[in-house]
Image (cartoon, rainbow, N blue to C red; front, side):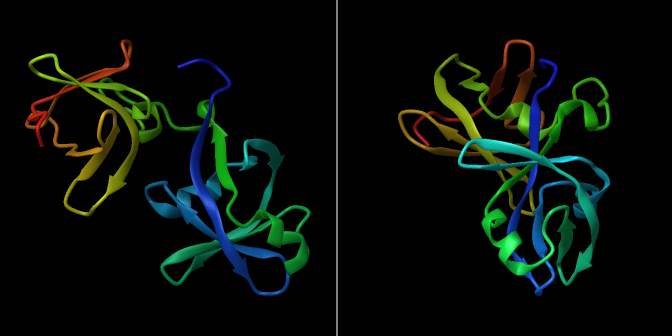
Amino acid sequence: MQSGKRIVVGRIAGLYGVRGWVHIQSDTEPQDNILRYTPWQLGINGVWRTVRPLDGRPHGKGLVARIEGCDDRDQAQPLVGAEIAVPREALPALENEQYYWADLIGCQVVTTAGIELGHVDHLLETGANDVLVISGEQERLVPFIRDQVVTRVDMVARRIEVDWDPEF
């Protein structure tokens, strides 16, 4: 991975109260890990800016946070829908054969027979197992089950091999 790459770790999902707090949808595991990263990079329509989360906490099944420069609801409103990213270097180092979801996005996906299915557009968390959403001639949903469906992940070549029927 190139240095300086940002990794999206969540998004601002809505407003909370009248003092500039926002609801956070976190893609980190556990979800409150997002509150440990600072600064955040907020992306809206491809334009990124750096901000600092000043405070945050669990709220219901999600999180709420207060961001610098947002002292009231009107200042927080334009941030709703923004992606929250952090520099790749801020994430914990991984062991061999481990990767973040963000690393898989854009990887070419081919069957064990060498048939190209497309590229990973995004992933879904379903509870039972994660699912690769593959964009190509058609959209495919392929369960991310190591050693059964996903037979090989080559991060250097940015290629994922799957044991999957291309007609499915």
